[in-house]
Image (cartoon, rainbow, N blue to C red; front, side):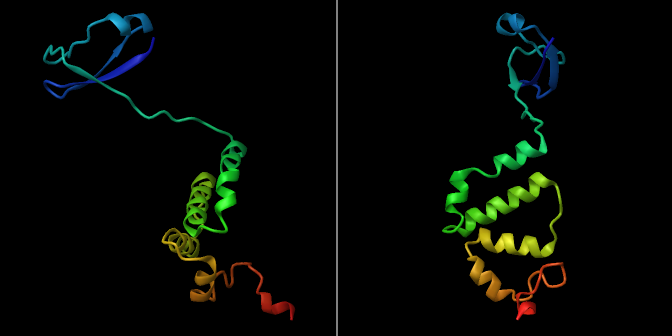
Length: 130
């Protein structure tokens, strides 16, 4: 039997009731505290469990990928969403880059402003192969 959550508009008390689907359409709902007949239904957000692969697939929306080269803010938004979906802390440098992208700074400008970005974190230095 489904649970429905309400808030009484008269006394502000929150309460739950159990109703069948048929009862929900027809049953009068009253507040158990004040007896008021002025309840407001509370609709809570629904969480949907997805596999890691489904979460990653949702991040590769072709419409987003097509705009990455032209729009730093979209790139920043996508990078932040990927970090959230993976559930990993990517570190302060990642946050700095994403914040700058979301403000509209281009990747080239960020690279110019932060020349030591990624140094010492296993990212190869392009100058080592000369």
